[in-house]
Structure formats: C-alpha cells, structure tokens
Picture 1 (cartoon, rainbow, N blue to C red):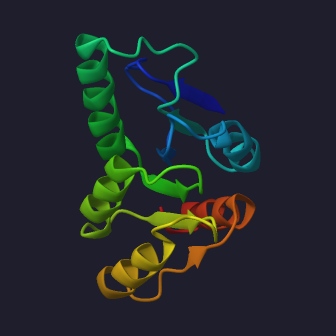
Picture 2 (cartoon, one colour):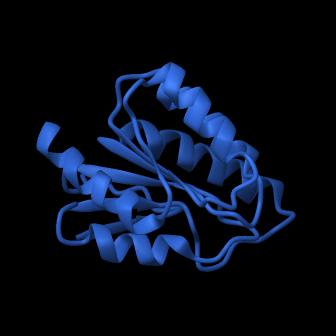
Length: 150
C-alpha cells in the first residue's frame, strides 16, 4: 500500500485509491486506524493529515485545500468519517459535493457526532440506500467492498 500524505503529489500512484475525508484539527488521528483497516485491500490511500502543519500560514492553508480538492477528484472512492469531537464544516461541504456525484462512497458518523442526524437524512435523499455506519471499523469494511465495483 502507498499512503500519499499531504502535500505529496505523486505522478502515478497505484490504483485504485481511496481518499480519507474527515476531521484533522481537533480530532484524534482516526486516519491511522483507517489505514490499518484498508491496508489489505487498497493499493493507495490519500491522507490529508500531515505530521506537521503550520497553523496560521495562509500559503500552506491554500496549498492544503488545493491538495485535498485535487486528490478527492483523483481518488477512485472516498471514505468519509465524522468523529464526535468537532462539527467539521468543510467535510460536510465535501460530502455534499461528492454525494451529488457517482463516485463510490463509504460514510460513517460516530453516534455522538452532533450533525449525524443531518448526514443520515441528507444522504438518504442524495444517495438512497447508502448506509451511514456508526463506527470507523464498519465504515472501513464498507470501503473495502467498494473495490469490487471499480
């Protein structure tokens, strides 16, 4: 497995690849756990969580946003995880954007996530039949089945 970490721009990563969409600031490093669950199935994982991010640096922030925008488009599928610690408005935006596409998605939201009801209701309208999982492990298991359709 190749883990592409922001702000890396590999020319030709292995395929298929999955993007880890979810909170970075103010939440535990759930991406580390997700990568372990995805490792047996996905040749490439796009991880936006950097080891060190210069908070307050607008140039670095713009570069991060551009990296995420481009890698979300490049990925063959997206795993969304909403942990309970913060609201994660940018991730909500990204979910809305990609739920309106035909890109394969696996979505999970911790039962304590304050906007879980909204995520479930909106996805029920945008993607009927897409289950919102209650824990990271089952979200990753759902993501692993997406490779069967690629």
